Amino acid sequence: MHNGWQARTSNRALGRAAALVIAMLSTGCGSLEGIQSALQPQGISAQSIATVWWIMFWGACAILLLVMVLAIYALRRPKPSRLGHPYLIIGGGLVFPIVTLTALLTYGLSIGHEFHGGAAAPAPLRIEVIGKRWWWEVRYRNGPSATPIVSANEIHLPVGVPVEFAVSTSDVIHSLWIPSLAGKIDMVPGKVNRVRIQADTPGVYRGQCAEYCGTQHTWMAFYVVAHTPDEFEAWLANEQRHARVPSEAFLQRGRNAFVDAGCGACHRIRGVEQAFGALGPDLTHVGSRRSLGAGTIDNHVGTLAGWIADSHAIKPGNLMPPFAAFDGETLRALAAYLESLQ
Amino acid sequence: MHASTTAAGTDRISRGAWRAGLSLLLCCVLNACDSTPRVPDHLRVVGGDPAQGERLVTRYACGACHVIPNVKGANSYVGPPLNMFGRRTLIGGHVPNTPDNLVRWIMDPPSIAPRTAMPAVGVSRDEARHIAAYLYTLR
Image (cartoon, rainbow over all chains, first blue to last red; front, side):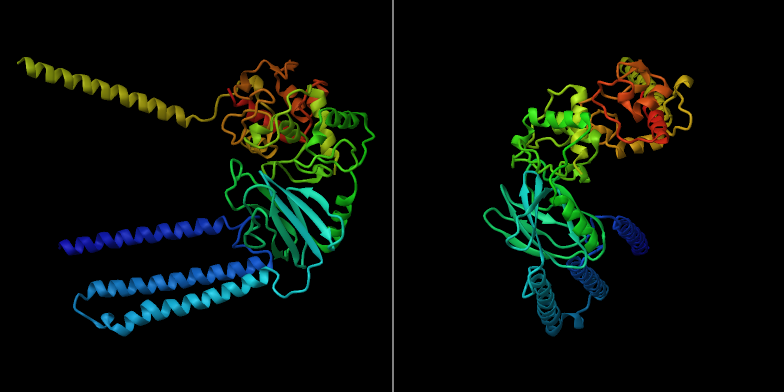
């Protein structure tokens, strides 16, 4: 009687646990859609990682199931049985893990070697990403001797070809991670780490810092735009150009405000003589970027004004001081000027 | 005798306290159910849907300059806080707070106040109606 009640309760509990697991899995699957998911790979590296992940997931499920079945069998048969045989203990406890884990490690290392350049021919395009607190400087280099095109907080690349990423940091350890395209690569002080990343599907993806680096680690993110090769060439050609000189009086007023307030001490705008700074992001084409503050907030004339006036309300602790000295119309002009830098 | 009177008194008090507590709880629950604040007729925006407006406020990142109740990340005091906006008398300190003025302000603030810092951020007329309807629920 008592045993029957216990069995019923445990059956009900088991049912509930199973329902919970199914619910968790299905919500997990629901959130797979999106621009930042290692389980929705859009490049070959990410594809390999996802394959390893699924092998490990289903392998672990199968092993767990087997162990549970054996455990239940052992519980139901209190008398000594064949389960206690030394062959089973050595086989299941030593041989099986050694064989499985060795196979997994060999496979993992082989694809890791592939990502880090291996013996492949040099990639035609090299993108250098430098981690900063808390944003990313991005330099594009077509060939080793070419002068780099400097940009920030958004990485553009052509689809279908491997791109060499050379990552470093100017302060603490950061880690570059674009889950939809590849695994993580650390940015270590005094070192340049290399990884090859290839996007297969044009689209916009999101990446972020994957190594805790201080106050704004959470909002140290970026967008990745994968273009068709033609689109990429057009984008790069535009990025190479100097900032356009505004002809409208209102935008000129914004440009003057930028120069007069000394913004150029920290920010560079190619084509503006007084804007040569290297402490903050290059703003030559800031208006064309999707976000402000490294993925913190969408970029438009309104958020630009808010960011300039008090960036700490949006991203507390960032290294840009609030600029509260502009009158309303000037602030609006300055934001409009920056937005016009496409 | 004395002891039993005290016990009965405590009983009565605790029953009264229970009743008061329950009615208080009921009031709280009923109030919570009525989550749509009543917007007076003169602040009704034709074609404006507050729920869509709330989403648009997030999408346009109005929080880059304004404190907005219950909107995540809207912590900035660059512009005026938007709490109690439904009770605000003037928009931008310039024009009466009417639906027509507010829709116009959201679409193009400098057309009303040329020296304002708030730029036109590309909000369409329909979107402005939704945002206005949302702002009037803040009261």
